[in-house]
Image 1 (tube, rainbow, N blue to C red):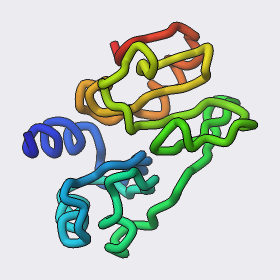
Image 2 (cartoon, rainbow, N blue to C red; image 1 turned 45 degrees about the vertical axis):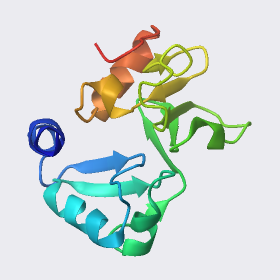
Image 3 (cartoon, helix red, strand yellow; image 1 turned 90 degrees about the vertical axis):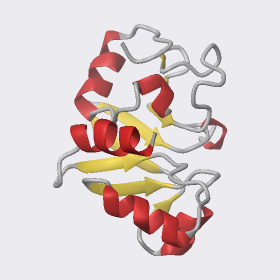
Image 4 (tube, rainbow, N blue to C red; image 1 turned 135 degrees about the horizontal axis):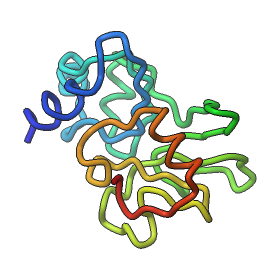
Length: 149
């Protein structure tokens, strides 16, 4: 599983100089040494939005563990958090989150245009990172999707 997630998923898609936004739950157990070991195997420059299983990432000093992150793409605003419930009620733009994985895809599908929400749990993405370009294309299409096509 580790080989698949790292080599066949992440590192096959992400280049050494790519910017990566990670929305939490990197390693269990979440100890600083485990987090540093995982990050050492992963390509890219990682911006880290901490999840509920990331105490070790917060303590590791290997990443700047943030609570949220904002960016714009194609004239749309995106806010990234780990848990969708942590988004401010007055947010503007789209919410990008993890946390629910594939446990509740009817409530938290990959793309929910009505709620303006994108669930980037690895199970819904085919265990590969999602590029900003692909994210934007799906959002622009406006179709609800249970999982990444």
